[in-house]
Figure: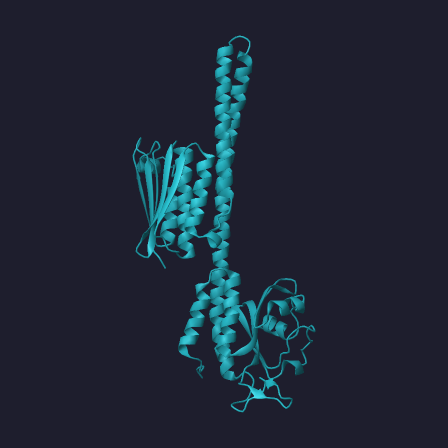
Length: 392
């Protein structure tokens, strides 16, 4: 039998679950959606760990003060264990009368009717979702207070129809949770790859600079007595090489510093990074923006990473004296433009030589969010990298 809940409400709940990218946000959205659709007083979702406890546990309907007072997270026992280990739904008229019930801490809210559903991806149980205290309208108790456990309209407690609806939610929750985990894993791998790339380049650049410094210092020491003028030139070269090494280190620190996209937004993050690079390098680095609205998270991350790669090329490889970064609105999306006055290159020749200058990575990022990357450059005439991304 199809649930009586409004189709629009169900659709909104399913869309909300699948719109989130962070695992914690997905869990919280699942719990809030289930509680709202089934009109329950309390809802919770636990993600099991491998040690008999829960790696994550989110609740809805419990205040922060109550949650802190309750104490440690529950263990995988009793009814929770039945949902997790046997992957079976649990619908109880009063959880306190079930022989598996093991009690709860003194600060825990009083639960009666109970509906629990495993969230599973194939054979793997991803979590346990449960609701308690179905709101069946308000009635006045014999003591004169409000008793949400009683109603003349219909019997209290979760119905078979509620169970069917929660099963539907759990199936979609499994998809949303799996997608969020894949997204977080992909982001971790991306970050690890970025750090590995920066580490390799830092090692190569600084090692080369230090080797040159050592040779130049040795040459200067040998010339001090017999040719002081040449020794002075060597000392000036040492100063120049030391300055370049310092620039390399500063730039690496900037790239390793995590971007604050979630907190600051794309425009502020780009402005901050270009300001830091402007201070760290002898080249002038500027940033302008015009009419840009917030973009979907994936698009903003792609824009930031392409900007970082293009700046890296301009400052480390192109010997640019000026780099201009601009971000402007185009329709519901945006266009990033990074232009420099450096030595430039022939894009086709770069590909033939196997030196991509990050172009492959930038194109992959653009295509991954439905965007387009354009590269314009000629030897001696600088380079322009342009990325257009769609909006949400």
